[in-house]
Length: 313
Image (spheres, rainbow, N blue to C red):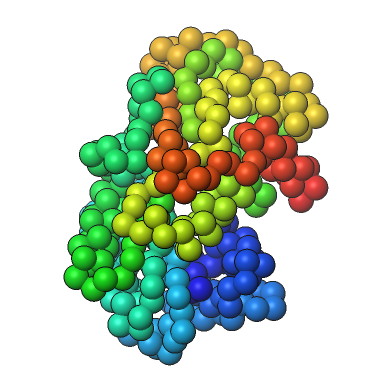
């Protein structure tokens, strides 16, 4: 198995899990990185440069492509879509072309739920086969990469599987999820006590289980899968659960959501408010039905594991 983005939040534990599952792993990173036994490190600074892919992919059965230009809240590039396309579309297709030439059997692409859209109406989840409706350059680039990979698969016969995760959490998580845990442990009063939205998330262990299942399952080829813990939660409920698992009291002030949106808009933080206030739910019925896969870890188990890591880091 060749894994790109192998030193990331998902990549490192995937390398370990793949090795435990019996794969010889080539871990592709931008900088030299130490991995355990059974994992060989390959350094590639730019996916759009010529590198010795043919040598790296010798005898590779599966490529799992995690590397990407990731979504950022404050985009600093003027032509953001072109910047995303260069890495997420052009770089992905270049990698896929080398994989096909090398005889790779299956190419698994970690996409994003943003291909489906930014939000859902409460209890009206996204489905894997819904028409894509991305709203920002990152989501558009991921959609274009998916479409290009399926066209490429039709031409070459290399199997392609797409996985679209929502927010992924677990040990070593960063970004907004880590910030929420810090807020809770600082015992700050938070104006987030009146949220009734519903959001899907996925524990890292559940995502890794799906990826590894897709490497071998015959039904996975040519499919798009959504993934979650199978239990949705409001932001208010999430913060209460985190407080309990971090062994601190929660201090949540029930400020009406409309007030939060108004205040956030005044201060130019509408996008941040939307991420906290909107619902974003995914239906994993297709994943359950086609793959016979149920989440290994419940939401509470995933949060407990993450909280334990946070407390002991």
